[in-house]
Image (cartoon, rainbow, N blue to C red; front, side):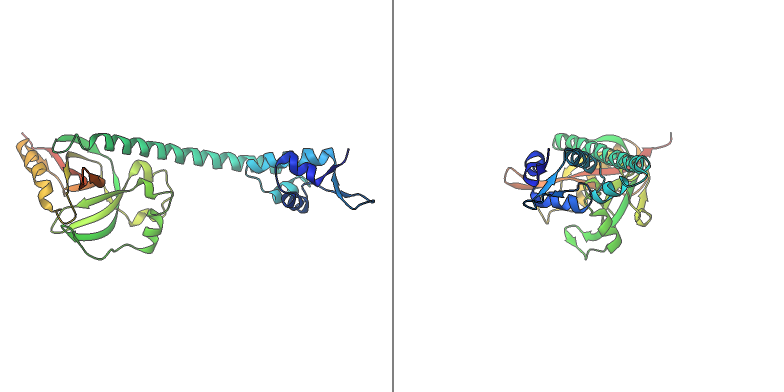
Length: 267
């Protein structure tokens, strides 16, 4: 039985133009009817078209489908399927990272208000830091970041894994940090330009930086005093990670997790 182009269009829910496109690619071959010059297709064309739809969902282009059917079919098919398998594995690994990140952010948002002005010690994993800007309180200098780094860290694949981090000193230095557990699984050829912050124990607290213009070094002083009262030795610069920014009960809030790197004083 012969099928017209409209029959294939209805069967596969695609336009006549797409069917003509796949015909040009050599997926199917029409026969012109001598009495009216209409295109017609055989049942074998329908089988081939259905197979093409399946292959297309496996990441094989129409051009490659047509060419692999001409010679070394099994060899080409195994290669294309292996490539698709690796692609799916990479996508799964990335989705798992995204799920881990979402879990991390959910835990933060559930706890940061309750943790405000409380203290705890935890191990902060190794971080990679990319410098963005210097400031004195809420007065900021010009952003300084290379095109290569900005194109990398602000790409859709990476930006979700960044934390804005401030380092306290004579001025505040603002960085974007990414944890090693994420960086190890992402494509980051510019990682050599990052500053490395090794794994460390930190005394932590959450503070509200307040409205724009209210931020200062004073927000870290309570944590430093508490560390001294517990006889901890400060081992590096105090840092802070922005946990959230937005209005709460008609007041702008900026929640910052203060991190004082510590170790116990020797007895």
